[in-house]
Length: 174
Image (tube, rainbow, N blue to C red; front, top):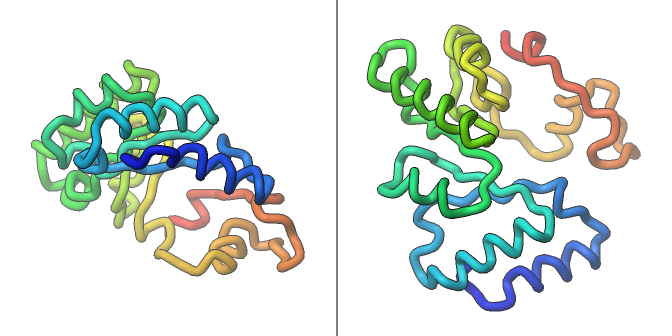
């Protein structure tokens, strides 16, 4: 992201493969911009103009989270799993997660919680307004073809990627 011409390279690849930028979310950590801040900032805004969704991954673990959110065209933050792992047992982590969700919603950002491992935490985070939930309680990492089958039991190998995908959290969170 700190390389001159990065956005043009990405745009060329997407055109070559008939991909749409708005179907992709690029996840960045706060430390991504450490080499060339000026080029990094320009590239982020150019990627946003191309239609990419931009998300801050591992939110809350860096040193400048609020500055990072306020100065860049992010559409989503991903709350780091270290705040979710012991969520039910930590009043501090509950306060941080609730404040983060409130702040994000007030800034019109989507919120993803990472690292959910139990149904109680999943339920509370859903009720608090998380837009996306990730963790072993939902599914473990898997090869892409297995993911497509998991997302849609009716998936066939000749289906187009992204076609007829449905998801029911209740059915998968057992």
